[in-house]
Length: 102
Image (cartoon, rainbow, N blue to C red; front, top):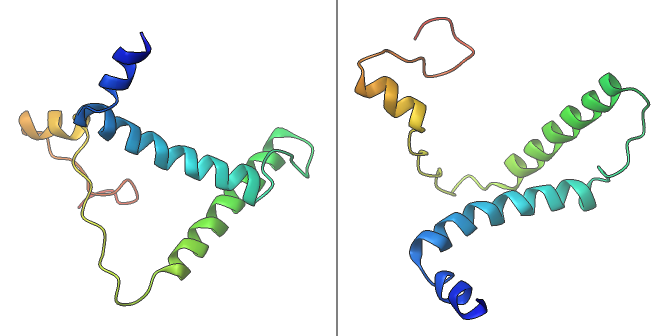
């Protein structure tokens, strides 16, 4: 069993899936340990939710501040399965949820 699992871990498909998981786990770890999100300082679901949103905004601002002016923009993400479906069926899709029309 263990040999089979270790062999599977060497496949490119497994490594691609693990790379995504690794990024998510790192972000969760940063919130839990770096920003104290295991304990909420407010009572009530709405106040806790607001704390989570404001902390996420602060983390995004920190990450934007860490970018240098010379760093290249990351490559665009591949379309999702839903976006592929819309494209295949000729259904127009908005580029952003913030706009009514593009």
